[in-house]
Amino acid sequence: MTTAPQTLDRAGIAQRIPHSGSMCLLDRLERWDTESIHCSTRTHEQPDNPLRTADGLLAPNAIEYAAQAMALHGGLLAAEGSTPSAGFLASARNVRFAVARLDDIAGALQVQARRLSGDTNQILYEFAVKNSDGLMLAEGRAVVVLNTPLATGATAT
Image (cartoon, rainbow, N blue to C red; front, side, top):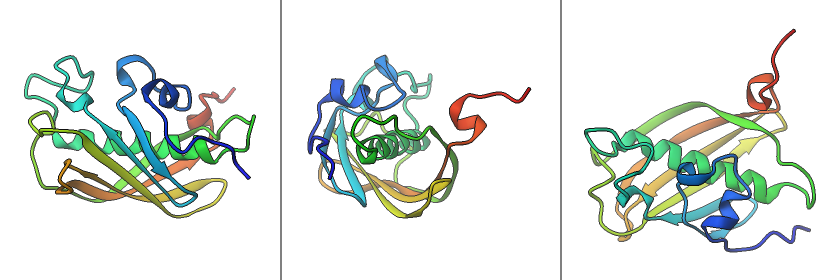
């Protein structure tokens, strides 16, 4: 049985994902269980958001928000005292955007991911990013590949 916390603030999240500083995009873990995770954030409103371009924070960046929620989910599921499996986002499919930009969305973004299937090599998630009223901004599916040379940073010799 896991003793992982049910909620976390930004500092607690940053300790459990490979993103730090301004690249840690999630502000709060709202809730999670073995199948799903729900986080919230207002980092999309920050003028110095590292994903922002001259055109603003474009909607495809919602995939990175969701990927960080997936990474946090994996970290929370890891056995107490163990290192979570290293992973990388291998694909995003059936992605739909209801907006062009995220930086003009008022209020906290609601970032949700639900594990659909998986094993020790890969995990399939569906994700949704909504506004604070529950209106869908972006949704899709993503495959996370685990424990590979790319995921662990190992190089072939």
